[in-house]
Length: 137
Image (cartoon, rainbow, N blue to C red):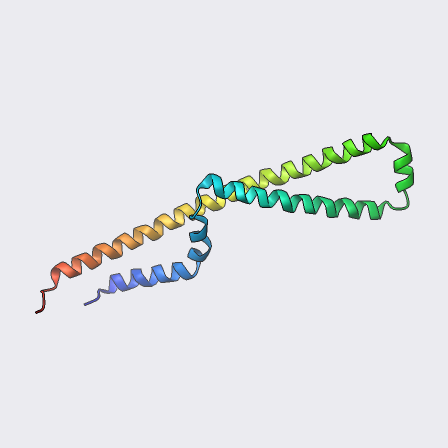
């Protein structure tokens, strides 16, 4: 005989697996350091692409003045300035990514712990029910 509490807990677990669990369970396949590093690597690639697009947009916007900009500055100085802006842009992006991926991993850890505690409760209820039922021959 199934208890109502066990059914309720199992329903809650199934709901979790279909909702939050789909997002959090793959995260917990990694160690924190590996997950955060992978996320930061993805962020580095996307931030570099974003900077490149923004830089091209700036060049297109300043197309009329580009010869004046190039003539008024040394190319090495201009390159160093662009590199400094790129490094600053990527550094800010990486700090944000570090915070975001750490927070996601922490949330996933807490959520999975709650899921495992529900699983243990269901297991204890099932063991209790099995002990209370007489054996049938």
